[in-house]
Length: 489
Ligand SMILES: O=C1CCCN[C@@H]1CCCn1cnc2cc(F)c(F)cc2c1=O
Ligand SMILES: [Mg+2]
Image 1 (tube, rainbow, N blue to C red):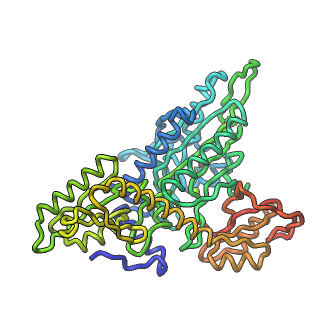
Image 2: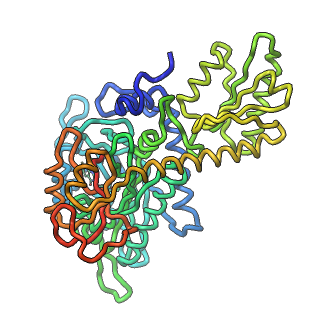
Image 3: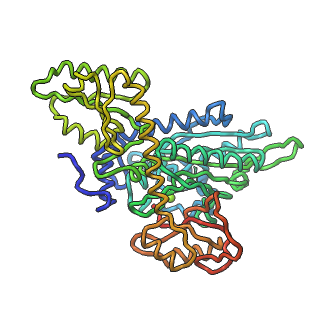
C-alpha cells in the first residue's frame, strides 16, 4: 500500500529515493545513474523553462537572449582544444565509438557541456563590434559519466539544463550580466521553488578552471547537512576567446578579443526542492511549480447523493481552472477517499478540497493545506479568492519555514576546533578565511571521511563585518573574507 517505509530523519537517502518514486517523479532505469523523468517531474521542469524564457526574452529585462540548438556530438580534436579545463574532466566524457558493427574512424564525444561545440562558430559569426553582444541559450541534455554515488536529479549521468553562452565587447558588460543571471537564479529558487539560497563567488579551487571567475547560488539541505550548488553563472574572461580566436574589430578598427559568460540551471533544482520541502508523507510542492495545485476529492458516504457530489466537484474544478489555477478532481470510484488523501499527499499537491454531503448542504468546501495540514471551510461564493489567497500563503509559508530551518543550520566559527565541532553537527559553516588555496586543500585533506570532505561553498556577496586582526580559522593567517564551508553533494 501507500506510505513510506523510511522517515526523513531516519534514513534521508532512502527516504529521498522513495519519495521521488512514490511521488511518481522518477522511475529507476536499468542503466546506473540514468533515471526516467515522469510527467510529475517534467511538469515542474516545463514551468521552470517557461519562467526562465519569459524572464530572459522579455523586453522589460532587455536581456534579448536568443534560443539556439547545437549538436549533441563533439569531435575529439575540438573537445581537447581547451586542454587545461578538459583534462580534469576527461574520465567523465562519454564517447561514441561505432555505429552498427562498423567502428568509427575517430571516436565522437557526447557533449558534457557546449563551450567547445559552440565557440568555433562564435569565432566565425563574430566579426565586427556590431555583432556584439552575442547572447545564445539552449535547452538540452548533457552527459557526464560520473562515478560518485548517483542521486536522482542531484547527480545523474544525463541531465537536462539550459546553458547560456554570451559574448561582449567589454568586461564591464560581461560582469554585469553574470550578476543579472545570478539574480534570476536566486528568484527561481526563492520565489518559485521556495528554497533559500546564498549568492556568492566560488574559490579559485572550486571555480570552473576554464573561466575567469564563477558565481553561484548555494542551497543547503538541513537533513543531510550538505550544501548543494544550485546554479552557476561564470565569467569566462577572454580565455575561450584566445583559444577559439573569437575577435572583433572595435570602433578604432583594432582587433580585440571578446569577453564571455556561460551560465546554467539544471534539473538538479527539482531534487533540491524535494529534499528541502519533502516530509514523511511524501513530496510537498510549492504552488508556483506544482503541476496540480488543487485536487478535489468528493466523499460519497453510503446515503449521499453521489451525483450532487460529483457535480459540485466538477463545478469547483471549473471555477478554479477558469482563473488559471491548476485544479483537478479525482473522481475514481475504485479508490476510497482515504486512499486518495494519502496518494495526493504523497504527490505533494498543495491544496486538497474535500466535498461531502455536509459541504453541499452548507454550499461550502473544506480545504486542507499540504504544507501545515490545516483545514479551512470556505463558502463556495468565496472559493476563487480564498483558494488564490491560500496558494499564496502556502508558497510564502514554505519559503519562510525553509529559510528559518536553513538559518538555524548556519554556524559562525572563528577557530579550527569550532569548525570541526560544527562540521560534526552538520552545520553550514561561516568562517573567516585567508583565501589561500593551500589552506583550502589542507582543510579538505584533514576532513576527509566516509561522508566526504569539507570544502568551500562560496564567499557570500553579502560579507559580514570582518574586524581588523581577525585570523583565518584554519591557517591563523590574517583573514581576507567570510566564506561558507561544508560537505556538499
Ligand atoms: O557550468 C557551466 C554553465 C554552462 C556551460 N558550461 C559551464 C562550465 C561547465 C564546466 N564543466 C563541467 N563538467 C564537465 C565535464 C566534462 F566531462 C567536460 F568535458 C567538461 C566539463 C566542464 O567544462
Ligand atoms: Mg562535475
